[in-house]
Picture 1 (cartoon, rainbow, N blue to C red):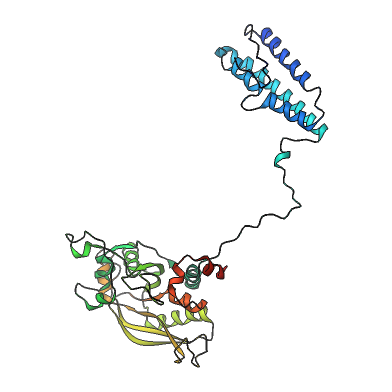
Picture 2: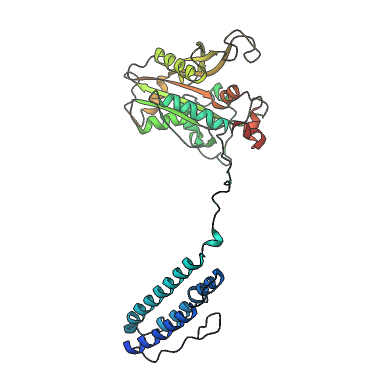
Length: 371
């Protein structure tokens, strides 16, 4: 038979008729009244609370176990009503005693609000993430949305659909990390770590018709030896704009505005002919050095200009690959431009970081400088 902590036993019920239940609960009520008569100190109030309301050995729990749980179904309601009345009486007496003695069950957990709180250290954006978010915000204000895609790609999406046919010499400029065990698959189906975020451009065009304006930030992988300016893992942000009557002038205006937003309104841009398999014509973009204003300094190698990104008009052959799934990309009716830049390099320029490996080291001494 259950007992509470002082050893008092719970009497047996003589029956389950209302008169017998009233008699049994009246006896318990007298016990409550007697034990609450001398609650003059906070310690006595706490002892009373544990005696009657303790979760494990409280007398009220013992009554529930002895009377309510073992009662026949037809008597449970009668016992439950009287049990709730008894519990309310105990809680009322406890509340009155706490008010009289100035004690509370929460006293041990009380917080002194006059003490200074514990200040939690706030995290800070990593310089890479901060730069990426800044770039995304610039293009978002120009109406661009964000595209994402997998880091493990097929050869088709990473190379072939972007006009890198098998054996194309431009493939050699991107030292690719390939997934092992792919030799038996056709070349276009073999898996590799994406070397640029350009595959997302193809996925996006296949999934939706023009017009499209997206920027694609993300991590890319190449088999580069790590040094102060190279890492086998780095971040790119590429952009794609496709619509009717898109011209190279639109491309120049877009990038000139973006660079002024990023480095200041005094920055100038200039374009030089270049080559990329997926754009024609293609260009490299330089900006006037934001550190010396174009007069020449160590950071721009005293030329006054810094080469920052590549761009060009989307090659019609790329639209030809997309047309296999999305006929709306007819190169005779639509045109577009694409661009790409290294987020790591821009972050190093903006924050004066001399070694790219610092951004991947996880060293708090380095990261705390940006808090």
